[in-house]
Image (cartoon, helix red, strand yellow):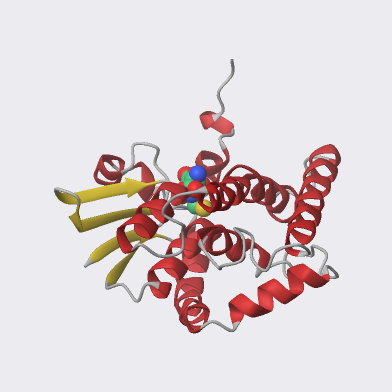
Length: 235
Ligand SMILES: N[C@@H](CCC(=O)N[C@@H](CS)C(=O)NCC(=O)O)C(=O)O
């Protein structure tokens, strides 16, 4: 059975969706990131970067395998199962480049957008405008891609879609534009998948645990998460 260490964020939910698509046997271990559990020695042994998600697969190549970074985990699970990523050829790189757009663009930029519009809206009008523009630019990029292809990776649903869906499934609560017809068609197609139904059930379980972790965070916990106060570094 695979052990998944995570919380309720899109980076973790993409792994939940993948495991559900694979109908894999897995156990979810909630990591209280607001309380700082990701900085404890036991967690740092499985991810020195101190972030979720991490998986531990007892049935990896040559024995137990630990994988961190959501993109690496998706590629590992796709290669192990032989599903959701072409094994070779141009289609593999087409899918991987759209996976990279999620990992380097959608994830970090939407993350900053949420930080400056929801968590710390009053600190910087410049940052708010910058990340709002970048989030909308990325939505338009995905819209353009999906106007030509059924799925992000190409003709078939795969790990680029699985990685990107958890952010795009949340455009309404993030107050980002919903009037992109191809994005809307693609989101609905993924929502209709049985694995996405199981993901939604898992999200409903995780939401109150995550909300309680956040509510219990001390001012010091928040400073550590945001790298400010006594955690601020200077170059
Ligand atoms: N590039 C990493 C990002 C991981 C990441 O930012 N994880 C967040 C949750 S979405 C986390 O664990 N944050 C805790 C922290 O930053 O201390 C991935 O794709 O796995």
